[in-house]
Image 1 (spheres, rainbow, N blue to C red):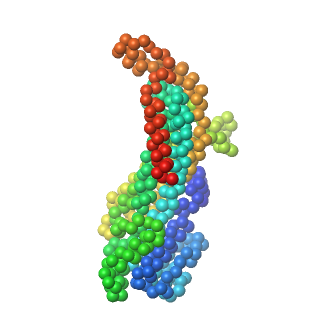
Image 2: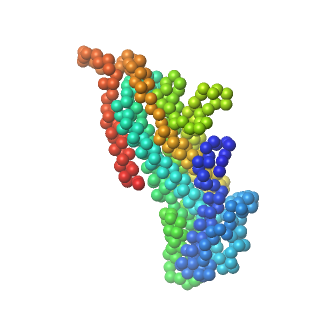
Image 3: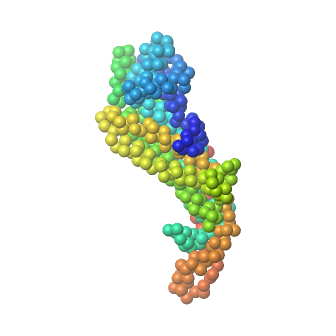
Length: 414
């Protein structure tokens, strides 16, 4: 996929694409049908893999037909029933509702996004741990409110980025681990499935209905959970994790964009064919990766807020509009996060650190950068030390702590 409105979108590949959603919905229908057969609610002749019965060639038809019922599941079920045998057609979708299929399909496509993002985060943790250790003693001037402050090291800057990335990664892992299937039937009570078990004269019909849901969830590799038609934490949790990622990436990109300014020149982006050029100023080398990462960081919070607004306005047993708002919002957030994650990995793995320029800038501003030190020295009538590289506080400990945390994270999440 490509998108002229969002340069770099192709980095997300088919994640949360129409094709991915269609395949996921078919997987849900197949898993549920398997559960009905395995528990004896449907005959063995109804079992079968539905994959390939509908394809990308059907997307246009399904998308157009989705408007009539407000979601794509209704025309999908109709199309599947028209293309399978009599028994599968009769038992397909029995006990489910459209929200079950679409929510669970969204969860499956979201799982792919979170897996991709986590892969990027691991690569970023490795790159930043290396940068932090390599530059633990690389002095530079610290900046607060855009102005020179006191000395620090680039290792500390990288360690700060690293902590933010690990924080985000931990949230992504939690969100991914807790992704549940949505299998509740019309109003979340599995009434139709329970009634089928009763009519089949099976012992403990509610337990049978629960077993169907457990089989389907297990087949899909998702957590079993009580129906959450109007309790949208699984989606807001994932959205929050992705927004936290873009926050962390935006922090990195903002620092890189600032420190790569012509008049600063302490950092530089990795070079690439045609990258960073201008249509009219051939001398320019724009920090385009940082620009595009910041774009994602600026846009993501509003998408996360939309997910929370939808969650807050879910009513009855199926929301009228709030549910529908989530689909495209989550797709946009998911794809953009995957793109920004890929761009951040590339940025960090190829980041150019101009240690010499950092040292020169610090030396040139040493008098101002050591103003705080002079104040401390005056308290005890101590002799002034004019060397800014000896006023670095606990920078070594800060880097060591961040790197040790990173190593533990990588060992625990291989």
